[in-house]
Length: 379
Ligand SMILES: NC(=O)c1ccc[n+]([C@@H]2O[C@H](COP(=O)([O-])OP(=O)(O)OC[C@H]3O[C@@H](n4cnc5c(N)ncnc54)[C@H](O)[C@@H]3O)[C@@H](O)[C@H]2O)c1
Ligand SMILES: O=C(O)C(=O)C[C@@H](O)[C@H](O)[C@H](O)COP(=O)(O)O
Ligand SMILES: [Zn+2]
Image (cartoon, rainbow, N blue to C red; front, side, top):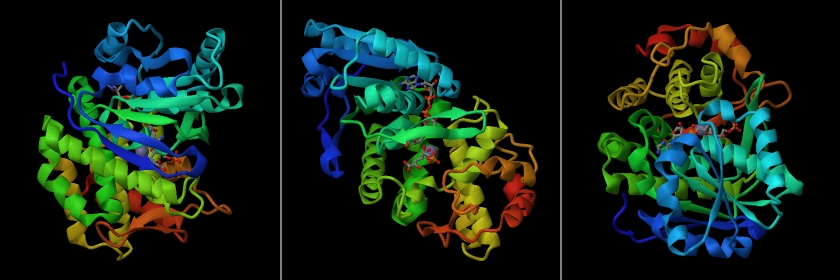
C-alpha cells in the first residue's frame, strides 16, 4: 500500500502532567513498532479494532511488528455506531481483564471514532485507568476524535451520555490509512473539517471551498494539510479548556446539538453518519443564526452551497430526517451542555465567528426546524 515515509509532523498537546504528542506522517505504519515501543510495557501490544479496519488496515499496520519478530494481540469488534454500547464496553473490559491487562500497558485503539471513543472509555474505567494510544484510521478520527480525550458510549437516551475525559498517551496519524476508507466515510469526516473554519477561521473555510473536493477525491497534499491544520486547531482549544468548563471547548460542538438530534432520529445508524449529521447541523446552526439576524444570508448560502458541492447534507430533507421541530428538540434535552435547565447553542455572527449563546429559546428552535430553510435548505 504505502511506499514512502513522508516527513513526520509532531503536534504537542499541552496538558500539564498528561501532555502528549500527535505524530502525523504518511507511511508511519512502516515504523509503528519503533514509534510505539517507548509507550508499551514489555513490548506487549494489545490492539483493538473493528472488523473493517481489521480487514483493510491491520495487516499493513502489523507488518513492521512481524518484521521485528513481535506479535500483536488483537481484539476485533463489530463495525458501526452500535458498538459504542454498554454491551460492547462490558465485553471489551472482560476480554482485556482475561488477557491480564495492567494499568501501565498501553491499549491501542486502531480505527475510527467508534473504536477510539469505546476503547478510550474502557481504558478510563478499567482498573481505574489504563494508558491508551490512538491510531485513527478514518478521516473523522484523524482530524477530530483521536485528540482531546473525550471518550464515551451511547445509551437509550442518546449520544455519548456515558463517558469520561481520558487523554491518550500518544496519537499516531498515518494519512495513507485513508486509502481504503469508503468515499461516503471520507465525506462524513470532511463534515468535521469544515467545522474548524466555521468556528473561528474564515481563511480555512475559504481553503476548504477551494480544496475540499480534491481532498475527498484523494489529493494527498490537501489531506495532509487539512489533517495537520485541524489537529493544531483542536489541540489549542483542548489545551485551553480540557474539560469544557470555560466554554472555549464547547466551540468544537458547533453543529452537534442539532447533529446529535438528527442521529437520534435516524437511530444512530448508517442512515446518517456522525460527520454527515454535523454537516447538516452546522448548516442548521448558521440558518438559525441568520433567522436571529446574527449571520448574513450570503454566509449561510456559502455553507449550504459548499456542503452540496461536497455531497454532504445541508438540510433536514437531505439528511433523511422527517421528525417535527418539537420531536427534534425533545432529543436535545439530554445534551451535556445543559445548564440550570437551559440549553446553550453554538450560533454564529458569520463564518469564523461562532459563539456560545446561553439565551436561546427552544420554542424558536422548534419553529425554525419546521421552516423551509431547515427542511429544504432554501434561503
Ligand atoms: N471523541 C471525540 O472527540 C469525537 C469527535 C468526533 C466524533 N466522535 C465520534 O466518532 C464516531 C464517528 O467516527 P467515524 O466517522 O470514524 O466512524 P467509525 O469509527 O464508525 O468509522 C467509519 C467506518 O469506516 C470504517 N473504517 C475506518 N477506518 C477505515 C479504513 N482506513 N479503511 C476502511 N474502513 C475504515 C469503519 O469500520 C466504519 O465502518 C461517532 O461515534 C462520534 O460520536 C468522537
Ligand atoms: O472534542 C470535542 O470537544 C468535541 O465536541 C468534538 C466533537 O466533534 C465530538 O463529536 C464530541 O464527541 C461531541 O461531544 P459531546 O460532548 O457533545 O458528546
Ligand atoms: Zn463530532
